[in-house]
Image 1 (cartoon, rainbow, N blue to C red):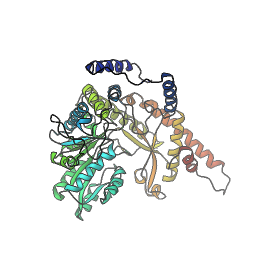
Image 2 (image 1 turned 90 degrees about the vertical axis):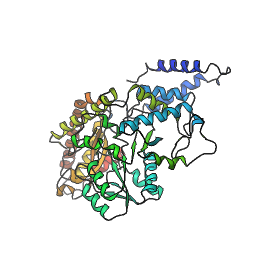
Image 3 (image 1 turned 180 degrees about the vertical axis):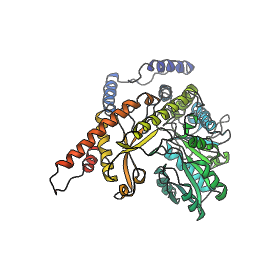
Image 4 (image 1 turned 135 degrees about the vertical axis):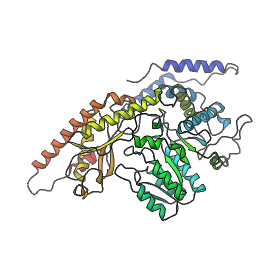
Length: 476
């Protein structure tokens, strides 16, 4: 199950790189204790084997998948020199590769003139975008209630005011609620989420762009999760309409370490106006000046940054160009098709409530129950039963109104549901196996809950299974 065949390619590439360095004076690297190294590596392997099997199609919990072989090998190859992309002097080749890779991502969005660079992750990338926004459009930053929690957190770090806007039944930012907030004034930046982390929801851009025409705010797109899906040709009409408008945003963040098949951590922040790059180029190190043939590098908040990330990304896009109808786009199409198929199976099954058709490749649902509390308890139990069947799902806390009427929502405003993240192309072939495991696990959990209720003595206070499940599964 773990690719080992490509390791021979790494040895060949190392030999090729060594030949390029043949003009250097002879040098012998420090000796390594091979026996000791083997012991430690085997210990590491044993530790890592204790993780969930992130590489397997039955892993559909968090937004994790292994990097493509070309990314893994190119990253490893770069570690033999360990370039630092803080400035050209730290890695002339990897800095050039970063610029070319970032330009490919910008081209995918539709920009040929822009500012941008790689970051260590989506949190840093979004923070940089908000920081620039605060300088060009001072005021309150607003995002939907389903936006990533890091926007509120990092706005606080930056000392910027932040507010949330209600979402609609599809978990997209509510246009009417946003319009009402804009009418009160004081908003400088609106963050649109292009693939929420809870459900993969894509905020609709057409109404947001209309509101920008009237109110003049800055529009930032957090497309850390969903940014690549503009290449997929099987999106819904509404989602397709949003991806067709990405180029009209003022800034955008896309994470190659999610759907871009890269190792953690690498994100890309892009600004439509090339002049926005001045905010970063003004931050200079006296010991990291540019070379004559390679001007000073735009590095953002981070100083030392792994050149290996840029090398891996460049190599991946060289092998799998991010273009429509290519091999890479086919992977996104397969992931989206898997989500649509699983949602259809769940929605047609009376055991479940699957209220949201997936915008991208995430599916959320809950077990049909009398109220939000019982549904939440069952979700915890079902996740545990699925794990016994080697199916790994995650939990998502969503508005209770999605799953039931007013009576269902009385005890809790939010319900814990189940989420499947089907971001691997292989997931398309495993939909029936995933559905069967969910179905069987649900039958066991529901039967156990009924038995527990029927066996409790009359008048006795029943210990809720949700509390037991919380302790067992480590849930909040």
